[in-house]
Amino acid sequence: MTPKTFKIKSFGCQMNVYDGERMSELLAAQGMAAAADGEDADLVVLNTCHIREKAAEKAYSDIGRLRRDDGTKPLIALAGCVAQAEGAEARRRSQMIDIVVGPQAYHRLPEMVAEASRGARPVDTDMPAISKFDAMPQRRRANPSSFLTVQEGCDKFCTYCVVPYTRGAEISRPFDDILSEANALADAGAREIVLLGQNVNAWSHEDLGLADLIRALATIDGLERIRYTTSHPADMTDELIAAHGEVDKLMPYLHLPVQSGSNRILRAMNRSHSAETYLAILEKVRSARPDIALSGDFIVGFPGETDEDFEATLNIVDEVRYASAYSFKYSARPGTPAAVMEDQIPREIMEDRLQRLQERINLHQLAFNRSKVGVDTRILIERAGKLPGQMIGRSPWLQSVHVETDARPGDLVDVTLVAAGPNSIAGALRQKVAA
Ligand code: SAM
Ligand code: SF4
Image (cartoon, rainbow, N blue to C red; front, side, top):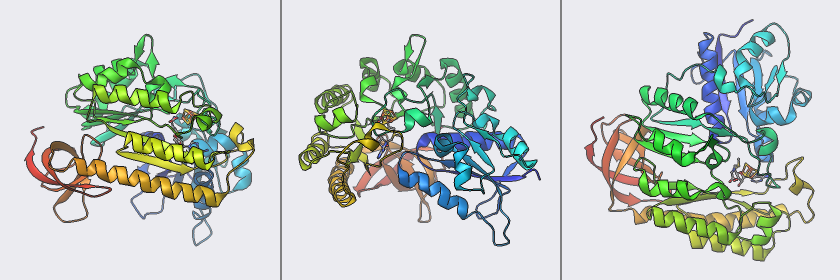
Protein backbone atom coordinates (compact mmCIF):
# COMPACT_ATOMS: atom_id res chain seq x y z
CA MET A 1 0.00 0.00 0.00
CA THR A 2 1.33 3.46 -0.87
CA PRO A 3 1.80 5.52 2.30
CA LYS A 4 -0.27 8.68 2.64
CA THR A 5 1.28 10.16 5.76
CA PHE A 6 4.88 10.40 6.94
CA LYS A 7 6.95 11.32 9.94
CA ILE A 8 10.65 12.24 9.83
CA LYS A 9 12.74 12.01 12.99
CA SER A 10 16.13 13.67 12.70
CA PHE A 11 18.96 13.00 15.14
CA GLY A 12 22.41 14.54 15.42
CA CYS A 13 23.72 17.63 13.71
CA GLN A 14 22.04 20.60 12.09
CA MET A 15 22.86 19.15 8.67
CA ASN A 16 20.54 16.27 9.52
CA VAL A 17 17.83 18.76 10.49
CA TYR A 18 18.27 20.40 7.09
CA ASP A 19 18.21 17.03 5.30
CA GLY A 20 15.04 16.14 7.24
CA GLU A 21 13.35 19.33 6.02
CA ARG A 22 14.34 18.59 2.43
CA MET A 23 13.06 14.99 2.64
CA SER A 24 9.81 16.30 4.04
CA GLU A 25 9.48 18.72 1.07
CA LEU A 26 10.21 15.87 -1.35
CA LEU A 27 7.53 13.62 0.14
CA ALA A 28 5.03 16.49 0.28
CA ALA A 29 5.68 17.16 -3.42
CA GLN A 30 4.53 13.56 -4.03
CA GLY A 31 1.19 14.32 -2.34
CA MET A 32 2.03 12.81 1.03
CA ALA A 33 1.15 14.70 4.23
CA ALA A 34 3.17 15.07 7.41
CA ALA A 35 1.45 13.18 10.26
CA ALA A 36 0.34 15.39 13.13
CA ASP A 37 2.13 15.10 16.50
CA GLY A 38 1.08 11.93 18.27
CA GLU A 39 -0.59 10.60 15.11
CA ASP A 40 0.46 7.27 13.63
CA ALA A 41 2.26 7.66 10.27
CA ASP A 42 2.26 5.25 7.30
CA LEU A 43 5.96 5.96 6.67
CA VAL A 44 8.57 6.73 9.33
CA VAL A 45 11.96 8.04 8.26
CA LEU A 46 14.69 7.80 10.89
CA ASN A 47 17.34 10.29 9.87
CA THR A 48 20.20 8.96 11.94
CA CYS A 49 23.57 10.02 13.36
CA HIS A 50 26.68 7.82 13.50
CA ILE A 51 29.11 10.22 15.15
CA ARG A 52 29.15 8.49 18.54
CA GLU A 53 28.15 4.95 19.46
CA LYS A 54 25.22 6.09 21.60
CA ALA A 55 23.69 8.05 18.72
CA ALA A 56 23.97 5.08 16.36
CA GLU A 57 22.44 2.64 18.89
CA LYS A 58 19.52 5.01 19.39
CA ALA A 59 18.43 4.38 15.81
CA TYR A 60 17.95 0.68 16.44
CA SER A 61 16.15 1.08 19.75
CA ASP A 62 13.77 3.55 18.05
CA ILE A 63 13.03 1.08 15.26
CA GLY A 64 11.96 -1.56 17.80
CA ARG A 65 9.48 0.87 19.30
CA LEU A 66 7.72 1.41 15.97
CA ARG A 67 5.93 -1.95 16.13
CA ARG A 68 2.25 -1.26 16.84
CA ASP A 69 0.16 -3.02 19.49
CA ASP A 70 -1.68 -4.99 16.79
CA GLY A 71 1.62 -6.36 15.47
CA THR A 72 1.66 -4.19 12.32
CA LYS A 73 4.29 -1.53 11.61
CA PRO A 74 4.71 1.52 9.38
CA LEU A 75 6.99 1.47 6.37
CA ILE A 76 10.41 2.24 7.88
CA ALA A 77 13.21 4.10 6.11
CA LEU A 78 16.63 4.22 7.73
CA ALA A 79 18.28 7.42 6.48
CA GLY A 80 21.33 9.48 7.46
CA CYS A 81 24.78 8.40 8.52
CA VAL A 82 23.93 5.05 10.16
CA ALA A 83 22.32 4.06 6.84
CA GLN A 84 25.45 5.17 4.98
CA ALA A 85 27.83 3.39 7.34
CA GLU A 86 25.93 0.12 7.56
CA GLY A 87 24.14 -0.16 4.21
CA ALA A 88 22.42 -3.50 3.64
CA GLU A 89 24.00 -4.74 6.91
CA ALA A 90 21.48 -2.58 8.78
CA ARG A 91 18.68 -4.91 7.71
CA ARG A 92 20.50 -7.85 9.23
CA ARG A 93 20.37 -6.00 12.54
CA SER A 94 16.69 -5.15 12.15
CA GLN A 95 14.36 -6.94 9.79
CA MET A 96 11.82 -4.15 10.35
CA ILE A 97 13.74 -1.76 8.06
CA ASP A 98 12.22 -1.45 4.56
CA ILE A 99 14.41 1.23 3.00
CA VAL A 100 18.08 2.13 3.56
CA VAL A 101 19.03 5.52 2.12
CA GLY A 102 22.31 7.38 2.65
CA PRO A 103 22.67 11.16 3.01
CA GLN A 104 23.79 11.64 -0.61
CA ALA A 105 20.95 9.58 -2.09
CA TYR A 106 17.81 10.86 -0.37
CA HIS A 107 16.55 12.63 -3.50
CA ARG A 108 15.59 9.05 -4.50
CA LEU A 109 13.41 8.59 -1.41
CA PRO A 110 9.99 8.95 -3.16
CA GLU A 111 11.01 6.36 -5.75
CA MET A 112 12.30 4.04 -3.02
CA VAL A 113 9.07 4.44 -1.05
CA ALA A 114 7.13 3.38 -4.16
CA GLU A 115 9.39 0.33 -4.58
CA ALA A 116 9.03 -0.61 -0.92
CA SER A 117 5.23 -0.26 -1.15
CA ARG A 118 5.37 -2.94 -3.84
CA GLY A 119 7.27 -5.22 -1.46
CA ALA A 120 10.88 -4.48 -2.56
CA ARG A 121 13.59 -3.66 -0.01
CA PRO A 122 15.66 -0.90 -1.67
CA VAL A 123 19.11 0.16 -0.47
CA ASP A 124 20.92 3.21 -1.86
CA THR A 125 24.13 4.44 -0.27
CA ASP A 126 25.72 5.74 -3.47
CA MET A 127 27.52 9.05 -3.51
CA PRO A 128 26.64 10.08 -7.07
CA ALA A 129 28.50 12.81 -8.94
CA ILE A 130 25.18 14.51 -9.72
CA SER A 131 24.12 16.60 -6.79
CA LYS A 132 20.99 15.53 -4.93
CA PHE A 133 20.18 19.24 -4.60
CA ASP A 134 19.41 19.43 -8.34
CA ALA A 135 16.58 16.94 -7.86
CA MET A 136 15.00 18.85 -5.01
CA PRO A 137 11.81 20.95 -5.21
CA GLN A 138 12.03 24.76 -4.80
CA ARG A 139 11.87 25.88 -1.16
CA ARG A 140 8.47 27.30 -0.26
CA ARG A 141 8.55 27.18 3.54
CA ALA A 142 11.02 28.72 5.90
CA ASN A 143 11.63 29.18 9.60
CA PRO A 144 12.55 32.65 10.93
CA SER A 145 16.04 31.15 11.22
CA SER A 146 16.52 28.67 8.38
CA PHE A 147 19.34 26.25 7.67
CA LEU A 148 20.97 26.12 4.25
CA THR A 149 23.57 23.44 3.51
CA VAL A 150 26.34 24.84 1.31
CA GLN A 151 29.09 22.28 1.80
CA GLU A 152 29.15 18.61 2.61
CA GLY A 153 31.69 15.96 3.45
CA CYS A 154 35.17 16.21 4.84
CA ASP A 155 38.74 15.52 3.69
CA LYS A 156 40.37 16.22 7.05
CA PHE A 157 40.34 12.67 8.46
CA CYS A 158 40.63 13.43 12.14
CA THR A 159 41.57 10.05 13.56
CA TYR A 160 38.44 9.70 15.74
CA CYS A 161 35.82 10.78 13.22
CA VAL A 162 33.46 8.88 10.89
CA VAL A 163 32.33 11.89 8.85
CA PRO A 164 34.80 11.44 5.95
CA TYR A 165 33.42 7.91 5.56
CA THR A 166 29.70 8.63 6.04
CA ARG A 167 29.43 11.97 4.26
CA GLY A 168 32.19 11.45 1.71
CA ALA A 169 34.74 13.87 0.27
CA GLU A 170 34.39 17.63 0.67
CA ILE A 171 32.07 19.16 -1.92
CA SER A 172 30.75 22.69 -2.21
CA ARG A 173 27.42 23.63 -3.76
CA PRO A 174 27.62 26.17 -6.60
CA PHE A 175 27.34 29.87 -5.72
CA ASP A 176 24.23 30.51 -7.88
CA ASP A 177 22.34 27.55 -6.41
CA ILE A 178 22.95 28.80 -2.90
CA LEU A 179 21.90 32.35 -3.80
CA SER A 180 18.70 31.11 -5.36
CA GLU A 181 17.85 28.90 -2.36
CA ALA A 182 18.61 31.80 0.01
CA ASN A 183 16.33 34.11 -2.02
CA ALA A 184 13.55 31.50 -1.92
CA LEU A 185 13.96 31.15 1.85
CA ALA A 186 13.89 34.94 2.32
CA ASP A 187 10.73 35.14 0.15
CA ALA A 188 9.17 32.45 2.34
CA GLY A 189 9.87 34.49 5.49
CA ALA A 190 13.39 33.58 6.65
CA ARG A 191 15.03 36.54 8.43
CA GLU A 192 18.18 34.60 9.29
CA ILE A 193 20.10 32.00 7.33
CA VAL A 194 22.54 29.60 8.94
CA LEU A 195 24.96 28.27 6.35
CA LEU A 196 25.79 24.66 7.11
CA GLY A 197 28.67 22.40 6.29
CA GLN A 198 30.76 19.74 7.96
CA ASN A 199 33.58 22.20 7.29
CA VAL A 200 31.55 25.14 6.16
CA ASN A 201 34.49 27.53 5.97
CA ALA A 202 36.11 25.23 3.38
CA TRP A 203 33.30 26.26 0.99
CA SER A 204 34.68 27.39 -2.36
CA HIS A 205 33.38 27.88 -5.85
CA GLU A 206 35.67 28.85 -8.71
CA ASP A 207 37.79 31.59 -7.10
CA LEU A 208 35.21 32.48 -4.43
CA GLY A 209 35.39 31.64 -0.74
CA LEU A 210 32.89 31.71 2.12
CA ALA A 211 33.53 35.41 2.79
CA ASP A 212 32.43 36.24 -0.79
CA LEU A 213 29.32 34.11 -0.39
CA ILE A 214 28.43 35.86 2.87
CA ARG A 215 28.89 39.29 1.28
CA ALA A 216 26.57 38.29 -1.59
CA LEU A 217 23.92 36.91 0.78
CA ALA A 218 24.06 40.13 2.77
CA THR A 219 22.57 41.99 -0.24
CA ILE A 220 19.31 39.97 -0.10
CA ASP A 221 16.40 42.16 1.00
CA GLY A 222 14.49 40.87 4.00
CA LEU A 223 17.37 38.71 5.12
CA GLU A 224 18.72 40.36 8.26
CA ARG A 225 21.13 37.85 9.74
CA ILE A 226 23.74 35.38 8.53
CA ARG A 227 25.55 32.69 10.50
CA TYR A 228 27.66 29.71 9.51
CA THR A 229 28.66 26.49 11.20
CA THR A 230 30.82 24.35 11.72
CA SER A 231 34.23 25.69 10.88
CA HIS A 232 37.68 24.13 10.96
CA PRO A 233 40.64 26.23 12.17
CA ALA A 234 42.66 25.29 9.05
CA ASP A 235 40.12 27.03 6.79
CA MET A 236 39.70 30.23 8.81
CA THR A 237 40.99 32.63 6.15
CA ASP A 238 41.89 36.28 6.67
CA GLU A 239 39.06 37.23 4.28
CA LEU A 240 36.52 35.41 6.43
CA ILE A 241 37.90 36.96 9.60
CA ALA A 242 37.74 40.41 7.98
CA ALA A 243 34.09 39.82 7.01
CA HIS A 244 33.28 39.58 10.72
CA GLY A 245 34.36 43.18 11.12
CA GLU A 246 32.78 44.46 7.91
CA VAL A 247 29.48 42.72 7.18
CA ASP A 248 26.77 44.01 9.56
CA LYS A 249 24.45 41.11 8.84
CA LEU A 250 27.09 38.56 9.80
CA MET A 251 26.31 37.81 13.44
CA PRO A 252 29.04 38.05 16.11
CA TYR A 253 29.25 34.32 16.76
CA LEU A 254 31.82 31.75 15.72
CA HIS A 255 31.79 28.02 16.36
CA LEU A 256 35.39 26.93 15.96
CA PRO A 257 36.12 23.51 17.50
CA VAL A 258 39.56 22.87 18.97
CA GLN A 259 38.85 19.38 20.47
CA SER A 260 41.77 19.43 22.96
CA GLY A 261 44.19 21.90 24.52
CA SER A 262 47.10 19.45 24.36
CA ASN A 263 49.37 19.56 21.30
CA ARG A 264 50.32 15.92 21.83
CA ILE A 265 46.67 14.89 21.62
CA LEU A 266 45.94 17.29 18.74
CA ARG A 267 48.72 15.59 16.76
CA ALA A 268 47.33 12.14 17.54
CA MET A 269 43.92 13.43 16.45
CA ASN A 270 45.43 14.65 13.14
CA ARG A 271 43.90 18.08 13.77
CA SER A 272 46.50 20.10 11.77
CA HIS A 273 46.47 22.96 14.31
CA SER A 274 48.16 23.40 17.65
CA ALA A 275 46.70 25.10 20.72
CA GLU A 276 48.88 28.13 19.87
CA THR A 277 47.84 28.44 16.22
CA TYR A 278 44.20 28.05 17.27
CA LEU A 279 44.55 30.83 19.86
CA ALA A 280 46.28 33.06 17.30
CA ILE A 281 43.28 32.68 14.96
CA LEU A 282 40.90 33.64 17.76
CA GLU A 283 43.00 36.68 18.55
CA LYS A 284 42.64 37.87 14.95
CA VAL A 285 38.90 37.16 15.04
CA ARG A 286 38.58 39.15 18.26
CA SER A 287 40.44 42.09 16.82
CA ALA A 288 38.11 42.10 13.79
CA ARG A 289 34.99 41.75 15.96
CA PRO A 290 35.74 42.43 19.65
CA ASP A 291 32.32 41.36 20.97
CA ILE A 292 32.30 38.00 19.15
CA ALA A 293 30.80 35.04 21.05
CA LEU A 294 33.12 32.07 20.69
CA SER A 295 32.02 28.48 20.78
CA GLY A 296 33.85 25.18 20.38
CA ASP A 297 33.77 21.40 20.58
CA PHE A 298 35.84 19.21 22.90
CA ILE A 299 36.50 15.51 23.14
CA VAL A 300 37.67 14.13 26.49
CA GLY A 301 39.31 10.75 26.91
CA PHE A 302 40.92 10.44 23.47
CA PRO A 303 43.26 7.39 23.59
CA GLY A 304 46.40 8.21 25.58
CA GLU A 305 45.00 11.42 27.15
CA THR A 306 46.83 11.95 30.46
CA ASP A 307 45.80 14.15 33.38
CA GLU A 308 48.29 16.70 32.09
CA ASP A 309 46.72 16.67 28.60
CA PHE A 310 43.32 17.16 30.16
CA GLU A 311 44.61 20.09 32.26
CA ALA A 312 45.75 21.71 29.01
CA THR A 313 42.14 21.43 27.77
CA LEU A 314 40.85 23.15 30.92
CA ASN A 315 43.49 25.83 30.42
CA ILE A 316 42.45 26.60 26.86
CA VAL A 317 38.82 26.88 28.02
CA ASP A 318 39.93 29.48 30.58
CA GLU A 319 42.06 31.29 28.06
CA VAL A 320 39.33 31.56 25.40
CA ARG A 321 36.42 32.18 27.83
CA TYR A 322 33.93 30.48 25.54
CA ALA A 323 30.40 31.87 25.39
CA SER A 324 29.26 28.26 24.94
CA ALA A 325 30.82 24.93 24.00
CA TYR A 326 29.91 21.31 23.28
CA SER A 327 31.86 18.55 24.95
CA PHE A 328 31.79 14.81 24.42
CA LYS A 329 33.30 11.63 25.78
CA TYR A 330 35.49 10.02 23.15
CA SER A 331 33.60 7.23 21.41
CA ALA A 332 35.59 4.63 19.47
CA ARG A 333 34.09 4.37 16.00
CA PRO A 334 34.65 1.26 13.90
CA GLY A 335 36.99 1.83 10.97
CA THR A 336 38.66 4.97 12.37
CA PRO A 337 42.39 4.94 13.23
CA ALA A 338 41.83 6.01 16.86
CA ALA A 339 39.59 3.00 17.53
CA VAL A 340 42.62 0.71 17.38
CA MET A 341 45.05 3.00 19.22
CA GLU A 342 46.57 1.71 22.43
CA ASP A 343 45.74 3.18 25.78
CA GLN A 344 41.97 3.61 25.45
CA ILE A 345 40.77 5.57 28.48
CA PRO A 346 38.46 3.89 31.04
CA ARG A 347 34.87 5.11 31.11
CA GLU A 348 35.00 6.40 34.72
CA ILE A 349 37.96 8.64 33.91
CA MET A 350 36.19 10.00 30.84
CA GLU A 351 33.06 10.69 32.86
CA ASP A 352 35.00 12.50 35.56
CA ARG A 353 36.85 14.62 32.99
CA LEU A 354 33.67 15.43 31.10
CA GLN A 355 31.99 16.62 34.27
CA ARG A 356 34.94 18.82 35.23
CA LEU A 357 35.15 20.25 31.72
CA GLN A 358 31.44 21.00 31.56
CA GLU A 359 31.55 22.75 34.93
CA ARG A 360 34.34 24.96 33.63
CA ILE A 361 32.52 25.69 30.36
CA ASN A 362 29.32 26.54 32.26
CA LEU A 363 31.17 29.07 34.42
CA HIS A 364 32.36 30.92 31.32
CA GLN A 365 28.95 30.67 29.66
CA LEU A 366 27.30 32.26 32.71
CA ALA A 367 29.98 34.96 32.83
CA PHE A 368 29.46 35.72 29.14
CA ASN A 369 25.68 35.90 29.58
CA ARG A 370 26.08 38.17 32.61
CA SER A 371 28.42 40.46 30.69
CA LYS A 372 25.46 41.30 28.44
CA VAL A 373 23.14 42.45 31.24
CA GLY A 374 22.28 46.11 30.70
CA VAL A 375 23.00 45.90 26.97
CA ASP A 376 20.43 47.15 24.43
CA THR A 377 20.20 44.74 21.54
CA ARG A 378 17.94 43.26 18.86
CA ILE A 379 16.52 39.76 19.00
CA LEU A 380 14.92 37.60 16.35
CA ILE A 381 11.73 36.03 17.71
CA GLU A 382 11.62 32.30 17.00
CA ARG A 383 8.85 30.77 19.12
CA ALA A 384 6.43 31.13 22.03
CA GLY A 385 7.84 30.75 25.54
CA LYS A 386 6.42 28.68 28.40
CA LEU A 387 4.62 31.58 30.12
CA PRO A 388 1.59 33.39 28.65
CA GLY A 389 2.64 36.37 26.54
CA GLN A 390 6.26 35.28 26.57
CA MET A 391 8.24 34.83 23.37
CA ILE A 392 11.75 33.42 22.84
CA GLY A 393 14.23 34.92 20.47
CA ARG A 394 17.96 34.90 19.81
CA SER A 395 20.43 37.65 20.52
CA PRO A 396 23.16 38.39 17.95
CA TRP A 397 25.44 36.24 20.17
CA LEU A 398 23.01 33.28 19.84
CA GLN A 399 21.76 33.47 23.40
CA SER A 400 18.14 32.49 24.06
CA VAL A 401 16.29 35.61 25.20
CA HIS A 402 12.79 35.54 26.68
CA VAL A 403 10.66 38.64 26.56
CA GLU A 404 7.03 39.63 27.07
CA THR A 405 5.74 40.90 23.74
CA ASP A 406 2.96 40.49 21.20
CA ALA A 407 5.62 40.04 18.48
CA ARG A 408 5.36 36.91 16.32
CA PRO A 409 8.03 34.44 15.13
CA GLY A 410 10.08 36.18 12.45
CA ASP A 411 9.75 39.63 14.06
CA LEU A 412 12.81 41.52 15.19
CA VAL A 413 12.42 43.34 18.49
CA ASP A 414 14.67 45.71 20.38
CA VAL A 415 15.20 44.78 24.00
CA THR A 416 17.35 45.60 26.99
CA LEU A 417 18.91 42.49 28.48
CA VAL A 418 18.02 42.63 32.16
CA ALA A 419 18.98 39.35 33.87
CA ALA A 420 21.15 36.40 32.88
CA GLY A 421 21.08 32.71 33.77
CA PRO A 422 23.40 29.98 32.48
CA ASN A 423 21.12 29.05 29.57
CA SER A 424 18.98 32.08 28.86
CA ILE A 425 18.60 35.80 29.32
CA ALA A 426 15.61 37.92 30.27
CA GLY A 427 14.90 40.84 27.97
CA ALA A 428 12.70 43.92 28.55
CA LEU A 429 10.92 45.10 25.41
CA ARG A 430 11.88 48.46 23.97
CA GLN A 431 10.28 48.34 20.52
CA LYS A 432 9.24 46.12 17.67
CA VAL A 433 11.24 46.73 14.50
CA ALA A 434 9.17 47.43 11.38
CA ALA A 435 9.53 44.57 8.84
N1 SAM B 1 33.97 19.37 11.31
C1 SAM B 1 33.81 19.86 12.59
C2 SAM B 1 35.18 20.07 13.22
O1 SAM B 1 36.13 19.44 12.84
O2 SAM B 1 35.30 20.81 14.15
C3 SAM B 1 32.97 18.97 13.49
C4 SAM B 1 31.97 18.03 12.94
S1 SAM B 1 31.59 16.66 14.00
C5 SAM B 1 30.14 16.18 13.20
C6 SAM B 1 30.98 17.37 15.49
C7 SAM B 1 31.77 17.06 16.73
O3 SAM B 1 31.58 15.73 17.13
C8 SAM B 1 33.26 17.18 16.60
O4 SAM B 1 33.70 18.50 16.64
C9 SAM B 1 33.77 16.36 17.75
O5 SAM B 1 33.92 17.14 18.91
C10 SAM B 1 32.64 15.35 17.96
N2 SAM B 1 33.09 13.99 17.59
C11 SAM B 1 33.40 13.54 16.37
N3 SAM B 1 33.78 12.25 16.44
C12 SAM B 1 33.71 11.88 17.74
C13 SAM B 1 34.00 10.68 18.45
N4 SAM B 1 34.45 9.62 17.83
N5 SAM B 1 33.81 10.67 19.79
C14 SAM B 1 33.35 11.76 20.45
N6 SAM B 1 33.07 12.93 19.83
C15 SAM B 1 33.25 13.00 18.49
FE1 SF4 C 1 35.28 14.97 11.52
FE2 SF4 C 1 37.63 16.22 11.67
FE3 SF4 C 1 36.19 16.32 9.43
FE4 SF4 C 1 35.38 17.64 11.61
S1 SF4 C 1 37.27 18.01 10.43
S2 SF4 C 1 34.11 16.37 10.26
S3 SF4 C 1 35.96 16.28 13.24
S4 SF4 C 1 37.13 14.51 10.28
